[in-house]
Image (cartoon, rainbow over all chains, first blue to last red; front, side, top):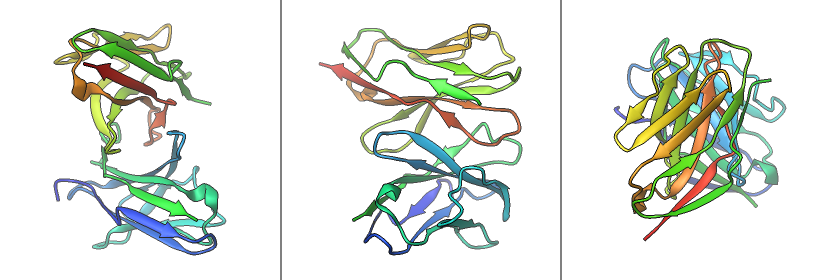
Length: 114
Length: 114
């Protein structure tokens, strides 16, 4: 597609439940990025992929967060045992090979943990 | 650590006025990219303007221009003839070379008053 698609738009989970977010990058883009924007508007980089391979996962809280980009499937970001502080908007972005400076953002998924 | 600082949490101007948003960054790299993103209430991230560090000429996009001072590590955004639709959060961002991720500032909430 011509736009980065993210589903669902909103997600509500009780504390301790699992949350799974999806991202379909723009067709032909080989890089995918996940960012977390907390309610104070701060952005935090979580993880990036080059095709199905993890490129940089330095921002991932590894004990509860995991992510995948498999061929012919949307990329996913999964949070096991959600905590209140996971409430945020999660953005996915994609870019062409060797053009990581030109990232196109999806509309975001708002996760609310109650 | 590479950081981006936006020292103005909020700004407010009248329609048609010119406004300048400040951004400073810290890096030891010589080549990198700098960006200004606009985030309206819809939360969609919109790229406003991009500057390549090796280019001395300041980038411009219609009413938006930057003042890039590489030695001072400063990257301000000037919005001329401001319009009501410019009301949004504005984020300054930086891409370290090879890092394939964006580092964001804290954001400036800009309000254009009629």
